[in-house]
Image (tube, rainbow, N blue to C red; front, side):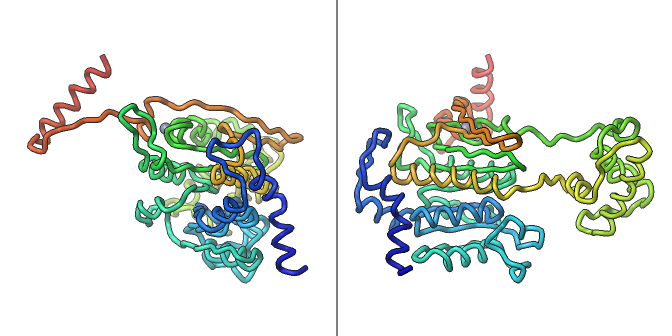
Length: 368
Ligand SMILES: [Zn+2]
């Protein structure tokens, strides 16, 4: 197919959204070729993470007409990534994910420019994040989400009536997957709940009580954790368990099998041992694809105003059948990250001691 025909067929569906008026569009939406061209020319999107979800996001955003993308990821490609992180090949093992992902998408989607950043998110200056109109998160860590959320909410300013000042709002689209489950959410600081407002959605990792492991194991995971947390130290005093050493993993697996036989428990396998010990929930390529599609559509809606955005949290469950639900969470009005806070104006001559006294007095008033 000729290049121009490919481009035309690629933008056919996009044109239906961007070139025509609609009933659910944003008040500022002005359909037309100009909007489509401006989006391609000026909209700069940052994707955080170039793993399973990040690869999908980059591909989907590029195919949705965004031409100026950047991606940040600190990891290198491992053999175990290859089954689902489809932009990577065997010869890429050991190379930075961000660099290879950017290169592969640029090879396949003409006209798109992706700048890779092989580093930690904390290594970038705060102002780096200011340059993007939307930040899209394809992460698997709560800490990283919290960090980016704090950065994006840090740009937010309120006017004297505690309304967010529009130019300071940095929207985020957050995706996450865990096995057959996933979520996509839109965070508009100052309007929707931020990540910190709903931090309770991410409960701490479940750990088994040691007494259960030692005395009354009931599941294969209990037997594995017994071998990993108790038996290892008993046998190898002083030697630290290394989850990346296959010999260590094999030892734990063999011990877990013995334990399971003793208690008549089924289901201990080598891959389950790896999963339990490394706290890994198997990643499913189709879940990444579905969540990425939802995130990309929300990014397009935010950037163009072609439709009302998700309000504000979509959950997907593919464990049995296929279930999608949208929940509208509310902002925590006292959120320390996205709330307007309390404005304190003090004279420069005030000493630190007086500032501390002032804070204590303020806290006392708030509590009482
Ligand atoms: Zn908040």
